[in-house]
Structures are given as C-alpha cells and as structure tokens.
Image (cartoon, rainbow, N blue to C red; front, side, top):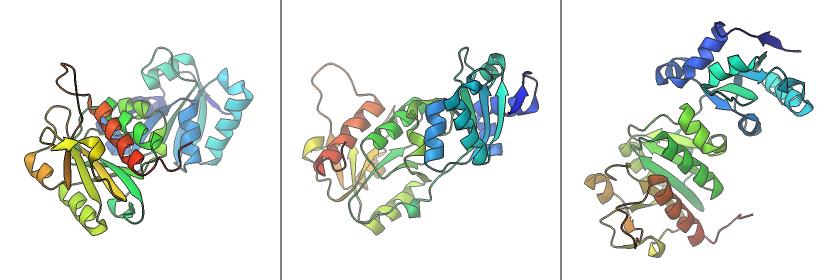
Length: 270
C-alpha cells in the first residue's frame, strides 16, 4: 500500500536522521515527532506532516493503517521501513512504530491575544530542552494560552524537547521574541508579569495574578537578569523548607503555572 524502504543509505532516511542536528532543522524547517500519540495530536491540531515512516509489520494493524492514511491525506509522503531503518532515523534501539517529520510552526507574538482572561508562560533564555518540553507540557495541562520564548533559548523542535512535551507541543501556541518585543506586547495588553526570584518579597500564592497574567521564569543556572526582574510587575518566592539550594526550572514553573490557574478558579478543569 505504501512505498517500502529497507536501506539506511536512502536519501530520505539520511534527511530525517539529520533532524537531530539544529543546523539541519534550520535548513529544512522540519522536525521529528516519534510515536502514534504525537502523530495523532499533530493532525488533530492541524500541523502539516511531510514524511511518515512506519514499521512494516505495524502498518498492517488497522489503527496504524488508518493513521497513515490520514497522514497521507494531510500531505505526507508515507513509507514503511524495517526496524533498522526506524532505529537509524530515531536514534533509538527500540523505535516507535511511527516516526514523522513536520513543518516547524511558531505563532507571531502579536497573535497571542491579550484580551479577556488569559494566562501565559514566558521562559527567558532557557537552555535545557528537557525543561523546556516539560514546561510546555505543564502549560498545556493547566490550560495556558501560550508559551513565549525570550532571547536565545534552546530549540523547542529538538528531539529532546519534542519528546518531553509528550505531544503538547502541537496543542500550545509557541512564540519567540526579544525581551523588548515581549515588554511591548505586555504593555499593550496590560498583562501582569509575575516572576519567581530570590528577590521576591512574598510567597507565590499571595501574588496578584489578575485576569491576564504571564509567569516569567529565568535560566536554570542564574535566573533572571536584574533589569528583566525590574521590568516585572511582581517578584515572588517559592517557599522551601529543606536543604535544597533551588528547585528544578520545570518544577518551579509548574508550581507557578498552577498557582496562576488556581487564582482564576481552575476554569475548564476536567
């Protein structure tokens, strides 16, 4: 039913294998997503597939066959392959039965609405792809309206970041901007920016999140620069009782994200 590839020397296999490198992702505008769940989420949210590789045996299963048909209808070149080929593409010894490549997609910052009740998360120069992906996943779980990447961050379309999102990359609008652009967007929409900081005057749960808020988190190593903190509406601290020096960025962001949601009454919670 679909074209079959058995050689790791195939040009398309080489193209997709190269997507683990940032340079290749930038040149092609593509990225990899592994697994049936990722493919289903991408299609559900209107992302454009370019290639879809499936394990030749798995492709005979009705559910996989139907999924591949949907991928093909959405414009993907669908191919079946051996386990060896899929392992080469994914870089894993035990690859998922479906590995797909999609066009990258960022939302212009100006398209993130700053009217009505809104909650956003902004990450300033985050460098760890696992943390980035986990924050995107948490923002999705808490019903945030978007994630904003400020400055020189790690690539949200890296294999590590995409895996950490568990499919939420496809559900949450993702924007990238300089801090100046972010500040102008915040000012225009009257969005309250609350940042976690060692300079925070009070605990995060007493902050005034308001109807439109944006949680701002700094780098894993050094947090936020002083001038960025000074531009925030409110600095808060997350209470700690043990001997740990700090919380992991993704954990700290999760605490803040859920507090902002609680302040709005956990609307739309299932």
